[in-house]
Amino acid sequence: SGAIMTVLAAVCTKMPEAKLAIVFLPMFTFTAGNALKAIIAFDTAGLALGWRLFDHAAHLGGALFGMWYVTYGHELIWKNREPLVKAWHEMRTKNTGKGGGRSN
Image (cartoon, rainbow, N blue to C red; front, side):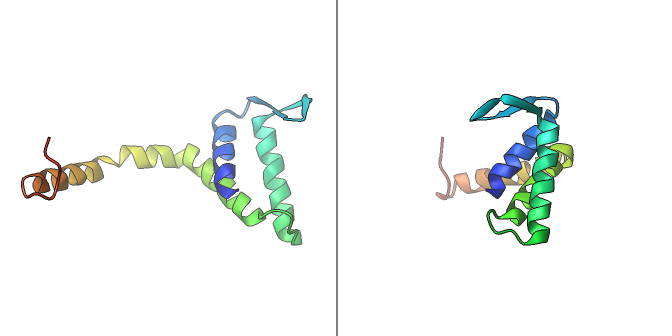
């Protein structure tokens, strides 16, 4: 449930003006930003009050990670991946001739 909350929070953070609705109540619509605020408030209250219906800590952790990833993480990770990719390619090409890797 925390991973699903990560995806939901990322989408709500990326597109806060998107209209959402509950599956069985499609006549009630709300913005993604308001939905995210309500879910965070509900899970914070559940964690503080000790409700055990859902894993509120997992939901909050997932929501915070989703918001962080859209705000900072995507750029931080994808802009700094080049050294890792170069090291991976060097390691693969070094082992190709020694029987350890696939030859093309």
